[in-house]
Image (cartoon, rainbow, N blue to C red; front, side, top):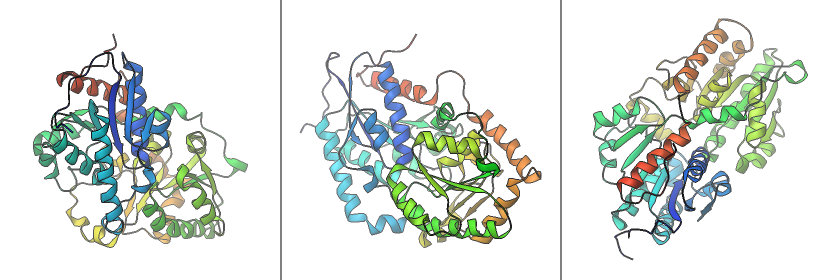
Length: 399
């Protein structure tokens, strides 16, 4: 196999390799795929690693996304041989595909390992990273190292381009967070089921997150009920965990209703009065949907011991975009039923805690809703620019 990627005829399909590492990346990747297909002046062929959304958009995934969706040093170490095998399998798949560009989507623990090895084998292949690693909060030296194998970073937070310039990272362009595109899926604010306020229960999309948080969430719901709070708990689950979560909550003293799929999720968000959520993209979605929240996360012991090295005021996306800790977060410390139930309880009522969060929600919307094309279309335009600068232009700019 030659390490030089040949120039391609403009009549043949454009080949785009994409590597995602978890459910949130699957959604981002699918949106980008659809945007590129909408702008293409010829057929696009996709290959790589993705989940159900990317597969529906046209990707043929070399193995199931669920096999690599892990987080935290202990979880990664426990599955290290299998993850290394999947990295090499993904690299071989990308190289054999002979793509015009490689796009990696979030999950740097996996996707960057693929990108580094692809760069060594195909040094002329342009590589784009969709979603910057959190170099502004953790291990800032990664930014400079990325320059060796990343040509362009698509940033989802407005402050990230300046951070990469300061740290000597790759060229970084702010495109906006695609969570704003999901607002179109949410119906108008719905009535509460049976007159009871809806509590959204969101334990995450990775199996390691769920295993750590579900026992805490079970006892938190019970503590809320013991306080005399009457509510309708709803648990929107990612598809690959829906059956497992349904089985797990079957014997909970306060049993949430498990729903699955984007339609059901956004229906639940439209009715949500309050949310108890794992830290992640969902916090930004909740803010955009107008739902006050309490955010938590249970770390593995090694990550918890190293948390003092984090250099940011928050790890919650909804807080990061407005630069203030408006939404309470209990990351490891405080991730217990008593603390969480005490924080969630006042958000049901129209008191000062809820009013403060609703004001912050307006700030999140102002900070993330961008003018012009939506984030996926902006991201597609950056991919166009990289392709053109590498002599592989194949997407037609819109008038």
